[in-house]
Image: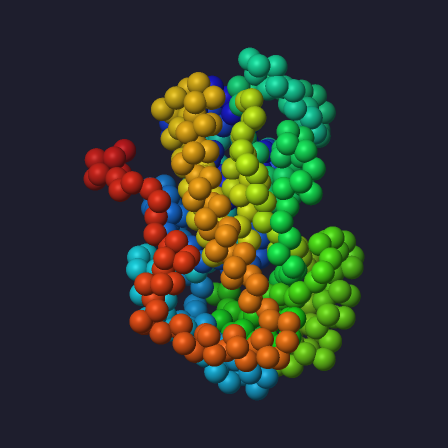
Length: 394
């Protein structure tokens, strides 16, 4: 069986690894010339950590943990009013976890498959024809190829989903907020801290990347408009939105790179009632984007890839395999999407009164006594069945 995976991000690379391990031939196409290496941090625990452990890449990731010991909610002077310590975070997650740069995880996944899997960078699909016996794929570089199956792992703005299921607008649920990020020089020296500063309708987050003298600046801001800004417009939009904001905001805006180098997107979920059609299936953000506020996007993308490969090994009839994969994952993803939507409502309060209320709630819940409640809310545990020692060795 040959499977074309459209998308060389976390979901696509994880799926390629597990298909190869299960005797199925994957081919990956990725539109970016050298891979989609995003420049922002991720929280990595639960199912994602479990899958990475089964892949044997944890040792590669450990040395690159983000040097963050606490999450501080600061005022305009940089003083922490509320602090989530590493000790409390450990009690919430109650299991192994890593804070990583997105780049680090994608790099480790790429390294794990690059000698065994064909990866075509700078390539994508332009048309799909499901003949019933195979899928015929037109490629952007020209020509057509046949595969047994096609899996869209091409993210929130999935080309595969558009070709098979229709326009993104049918499945996108905008949460009223945009985000942007880029790296800046560390001129502040506050150490191993991820700091959040919020004013009505806008928030700036800064944290160390692990590279000497470098921070990530992350911007969140309310916006009634879902349309994404073009690359050329991104820096001007940030400067106008965050003009006059306190804390270190003027400095990190002054240190911004060229507009084209800034990551920016809307905070949007993707909700499909069914994740497969004929010989085509979707995985990761392409079918179940939860947004960054879920803290589960990476973990569930890796979970979906693992479960899909497992289903295809158990049932080479794609109809049964796709149904089994969907049944296993859909409820898990929808539950986490609902939690993220609730959390997103109060993520960036629109008024000073809302900010005061948010601060009071944070002071209350960021204590050891509330760890079990937060653990249940964010679904931090792994959804995979434990493996025996013999299976892990295999």
